[in-house]
Image (cartoon, rainbow, N blue to C red; front, side, top):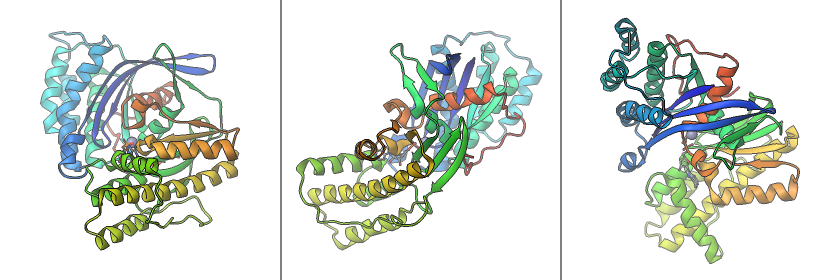
Length: 392
Ligand code: KG4
Ligand code: ZN
């Protein structure tokens, strides 16, 4: 089965073509085309992601990225009379709200032969609504004009499956269905969730953040320390440097909700605690900034690990997935691996490869494949983006 996947939930525009096949209880995915454009440099000027700016950039980049992914997959063929004008009109109606996109779409469709695809997968949520809508409308229009089934993907499922995808020597990705139950700690710029997968692709949310997402807290603390967006990698770099120096840390920060009898999180109090320190000491030295970054990372790690350990114990999980942009954090990966080997030696830790950690379309193709295989199709006339879409 060949799948086209489209991701526009935040500040990455991404299009991928995956070929999937079943072999011995597992699925092998070959990434035939993969095009991604990050808007980070644009948003960095503003210190964060602006939804309307993200939307405009997605609209500008989707057609070129589609062409590039199809070309890499050897599925791009020119044809001067490729399309029935009536169908094109119907498809363009689905793009009425995307003026920046419809002209490029129309020109591309007129000249391109219908590619041999079995499904079009698109992120329907969660994420920034204006950004999600561009991708959803684009996918609906493509589905309509080419008569290819559409599947709606939950972005968080994409992050989860990306961690379960094991890179093979030949470059393909294998996803097995063993290792259940899976507990997934999904930590990104918009989300912080502990999710249980008891049966294959059946999800229960065990806990979430009550306020800020972990990545959001990293980004806000970075801003207080005058570090550029996105803040996670910057904080991590400083904190790692401070750990190498192995000085005692003068800062100690709260661990919100560490002892509550649930699997929820809260990060806004931690962020505010950093703010008070920064306000009280407007002239923080580079060393102090690194110490504060480390104190912040230690506090985050402690609460994440405490609740995750409880979820593992409660559910008898055999696999722990760490997914989402923040899961790329070196310190978190290290402390989670240590804790598993000391306390849960039979639990396997699944972390995505570096390219699949932050937002991408390959992970949307992984989730999209299973939905398409189950014929869980979306209606191309009514599918709606949902910024708050939840798993399970
Ligand atoms: O999953 P992702 O690429 O986009 C969303 O779906 O949100 O995650 C982006 C978030 C940002 O908040 C970024 O600061 C954070 O992940 N991040 C990190 C690291 N790399 C990215 N946070 C901590 N440590 C990192 N190494
Ligand atoms: Zn994400």
